[in-house]
Image 1 (cartoon, rainbow, N blue to C red):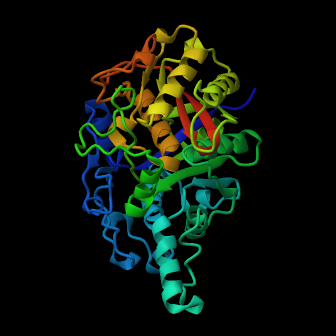
Image 2: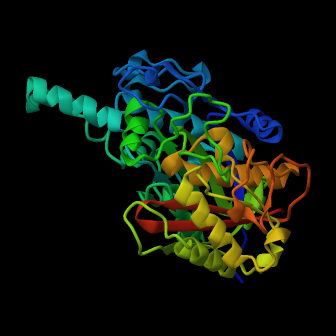
Image 3: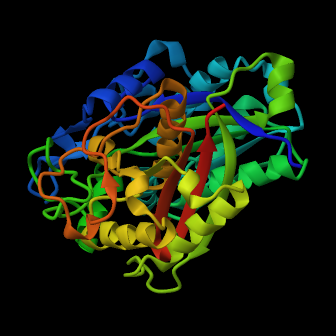
Length: 419
């Protein structure tokens, strides 16, 4: 029998709060973090709303001009190769390390690894290419590449923390951090590591959000209170957000040796592909259905033992409908399982979303509540036979499943259990 894997540390920089108490309060009270930020109010932006990251001012192209909470102070030499989402990740990591009570020696132990997920920084890439075009190749910042491409999280955090164990970055669009969590779980199960830090992060700026307008994927709603409305018949696209979340995974024996307390047990995960379209989910939710089935098999639990599903449901017409069909294909008595999408509160964090929602699930298991799905005024008829939570409720769940789906038909499901 495989040794249980626990979640023992958590760090949160999100649109609904930058620490556990504020995030729990937002989830319980269904307080959203969506605003009309100045960066999106110009004529060049059809979309006007975003799930903003509060307490951070990172619009300047010079990281030394950024304003962020003093307690997370980054050494100047380290900050030089950061893009905005790497700063968010640094802060989430510091929280998680403190929360798990990890020492520098434990982080730098060869049996402690770090997996990351992000889409890179479109702003940084644009900034450095613009300078190269204007002033020539040799005028480029020597740190431009490591500050920009999708591996920037891994490059910067591994170097800054002195990580010596397994490290890599995983990129599968909006399923990225789900893949990072699952592969980190497997790394521990295989005995290669005894502890893994997993981080997901995204910028939250014009360049990271507005390009999705070309896909007709973003909500053009101007009222932040109703812009993100998963499962509502009038949903018209997702709301972009950014930030970072870090989770610490470790074996039960290692956690108990250190006296670390668990948020939840990570029971298992599953992944599958639609094999359908480069950008659109399979209309019947084929890949997501298979991912959920594999996750349940890996976790060794029956569908009827799942008390709640945190849906991927980004508030897009096709994406939400596909997931509803997938859910009804997995749960034989659908009304027995409660479902909601927290993206109504946070917005859609792209590669960040899976680990962010996994953290919400762990908080729900630890704190004895289930988060509701906001802004559903006219439920989609496809919801029939699904028990949609339209308000947050105080109830102790035992097992929770969380879904994520990305471009190319990538699908990941993760399962957590109360300890």
